[in-house]
Amino acid sequence: MSTPRPSTVHGLFAEQAAHHPDAIAVEHGEHTLTYAELDTRANQLAHRLLRLGVRGQQRVAVLQRHTPALVVSLLATLKAGAAYVPLHPDSPPARRALVTAGSAAAVLLVDHGFHPVDFDHDARTVVVDDPTLAAEPRTAPDTLGHRDAMAYVMHTSGSTGVPKGVAVSHAAVAGLATDACWADGAHRAVLFHAPYAFDISTYEVWVPLLNGGRIVVGPGVPLDGALLRSLLTRHGVTAVHVTAGLFDALAHDTPEAFASVREVLTGGDTVPPQAVRRVLDACPGIRIRHLYGPTETTLFATHLLLEEGAWDGGRPLPLGQARTGTATYVLDDALKPVEAGGTGELYVAGSGVALGYLDRPGATAERFLPDPYGPAGSRMYRTGDLVRLGAGGELEFLGRGDDQVKIRGFRVELGEVEAAVGRQPGVGRVAVVARGRAGARQLLAYVVPASGGALSGAAVRARVAAVLPAYMVPAAVVVLPVLPLTSNGKVDRAALPDPGHAAGSRGRLPRTEREKELCTLFAAVLGVPEVAVDDSFLDLGGDSLRAFRLVHAVKSRFGVRLSLRQVLQTPTVRALDAWLEGRSGEGRAHP
Image (cartoon, helix red, strand yellow):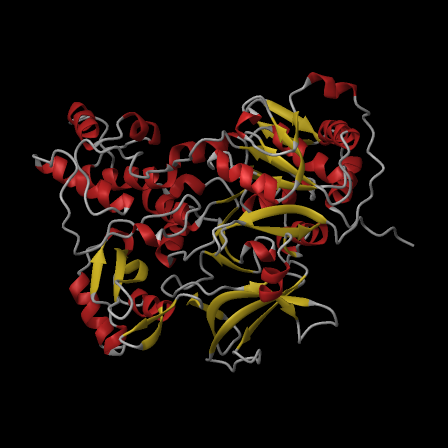
């Protein structure tokens, strides 16, 4: 009789460590940890946590840089029977303290790069670089754990202004990591570069580790095309995930950056089919996996594999098929399945559904419902996303069900308007918002041309008016070089500029043609109506992804390669204009 496989994350890791203890588990620059070394270090930290009183289902907050020690901390927390609560290093201290206190973390793990002085809570602090940890026992603690126990708590935005903690079980993480879609060896070496407070880190850490693969820890700095390609090539990375926004930017700027990997994963927002086509054309032999799913479904619920020769690049990307152990339902308001061709709300059931929202039974009951189509006692998650069910069972994403607005007294779903605008010729990316006071709202559409082509907003609007009722036609269609994005790589709707804004500048207005063009690029990337020559890109909300967009925009307009570091060094139009003047005739990008 065969022995059943372990059901916990750390149990599955121990199985891999026993099978090949000398294989490289974690790589960071020139430094490596074998499976045996990672296992030992995690055991020692787990014993320290237990000596501090950490017990089953307690939470351990983690605030560290991207190093092998971070992987040790995540594994050690599970070995101690606790659940880890990742804190975003770039979050304001007050928000980190809020998350730590709200999750009732018993211990805070930090490395020497962070000092706990900015925390106001009762959690004890352990510095994971402490050399005294070497004196702790090297053997695994006697904490078996359970498949239904919490493995981690990740926080998402809450409608009340307080972040919600999504509690995810060992079974959900184990189900993701052992899914059949990773079985062909394409994910043997995965780049770990995403902020670990976001659920993509679940893939980047546990898929390689629980399958005997290797984690390549990134440098912890924003990635541009050149740095990404160098990392992927130098470390033999076989698979990488990038957000939809970064994927789109790389596809337009340096699609060849992915040439050395076997598979690229992307999702979390609308992925333009033109971007997929550019990457597949530039990187023969690779494949792209389009993921869909909220944090509450353990990273993703559906996936679509895209390969050269097996995909019609002209159609919008459907959501794909449900992953192993997952079911998707398209239901109406009465929780009845819609017929083929119908539109409904998407519900997800199965092993990936989270336990719920930590210590928020009301919010949990609202979104995690009994599954009327599954086994007794099972649950399904109400995503809030509207989809259309195709005749062959494919799912077409239409938008958020809770983005419903009223225009002239009519109820309008923004997703439907976005879909209509996005189907127009020449449109690459699109976002539709409702602006104005109640009773006098109007729809505004923002579009990015496909593949860098030209686009007329008036022409797009005229075509949309031919397919939508008058009250659903956007009052204006604004053409932008890029859509502003949040730090998570999603469209920042609040930052979309007002097309009728006429406020005065806070500083000197541009005088030369190049200054005018740079001001326009800054404003478009930042999603603000106007930028003066001395306004700082960083002070106006510029982050790494927006900086990447600016790099691409400057290259497209001026033919000059600009690095992310250069954006930080010359963050104003005046400074960047002077730098461009000094580069006149040098470093021109090839068309």
